Amino acid sequence: MNQSILLIIIVMFTVISCSQDSQFGEAQNTIIIEEDYRIIPNYQMSIGDIVNLQKLGFSGSSGIAVEKTNYFDERYVIYLMEGDIEIRKDSLKSMVSNIGAAKQYRTNNLVASPRTIRVIGMNMNNHPTLIQALILAIENYNNLNINLNFTLEFRRVKTINEAVNADIDSDILVKVGGTAAGGSAGFPTNGNPYSSVRISYTTVNFGLDVCEHVLTHEIGHCIGLRHTDFFNRSVSCGLGGNEGDANVGAIHIPGTPEMMNIDMNSIMLSCFNAFQSGEFSNFDTIALETLY
Amino acid sequence: MKYLSIGFSFFCLLLFTNCDKNEGDTIEKVNIIEENIAIRSSEIFTYGLGNIPTEGNIFIQKQASHFNQSEIGIDNAQGGLSYIYKTADGFVGNDYVEIIRKSSIGNNTFSEKDLIKISITIIEND
Image (tube, rainbow over all chains, first blue to last red; front, side):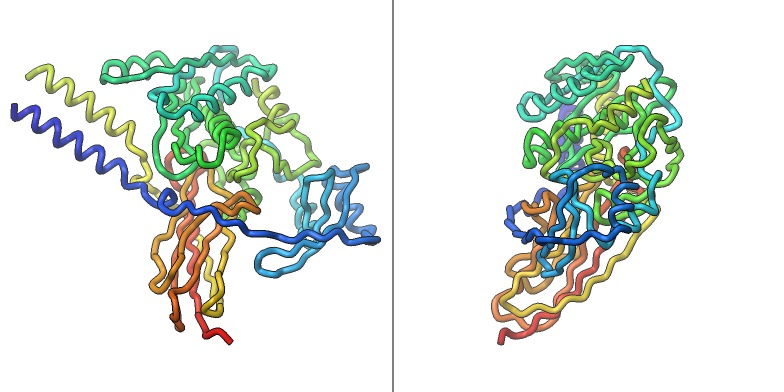
């Protein structure tokens, strides 16, 4: 009887101690903030800007000059390239000076291939969007021409034994946890992928594509991908610095383009937003097909 | 008793592996960003926090003191996050808020932290 009481106290303590990651989930009011775009008619782009855009890989691309007013009433000129790629005129020089810096990167350790990676989604039954997102993320990897094959299974686990078995039966165990949108994973060791991925249920607030993006990103870490902008997180985050080697390595992946330096579509950028597609960029595909 | 001990051991093991490991921060770098802004008491102040760390967290560490609204929300225009502040009705003076942004290289260890200190001076409407 006393033992049962002790166990109940421990369970209560666990629930309390594991749920203090409060923060982001508290205030998720949706706020609409408008920005103004105005096409600048008859804009004369300087030769220097044309050359710099060509260096960034926009040779032969179409673009328009737009004046943008942000919500601080700051006005600046952007070049809208290929319909959806924004480049600030005043950032163009610094972007060119970083050419070659933003390629896809991997850790020192990779997963030994060829092999099958068994993925189990554990206790995700209350999160249909995350289930669908995990299916799509696995499809992303299986659609690549690589020597890694991913299998996916969902398990509802009620006992410790079942949890231990799910851990044993999987190479990557996917769990729902945490309250801040996003997730976490780790990096390969001894030729094996990192053994677990966590995704927060609040990621669902951003929709299916973002959940697919986060899960694909985390599995990318598990098989050895570093953040594409690890050298300067502000590329995707707006803030932040260099993650550095971080004792896991940051090795450029051969085959990723030398000149097109800002892969803002990479699924492995440090930060995400509500508009992610959940799909690999062309450079991500090249990187993974080069590695595996 | 034996089974209970074994069960308890497994439970402890599960506890350590299942908990969100945010508690085990090992912050190596802290970038401090200081903003001083002045607004009229009827204005809404918005501060863009950029995109969301895939592995990380953004939250208000020190809440403002005189507000009707002081929170982080989704910025529908940019797709990332913004901090939004609206002063308390009739308040004129100074307010202060601190926002923390933690990020990791992809694992559970937060290696980088941005501390955004925003000092807000609220002046009377015209």
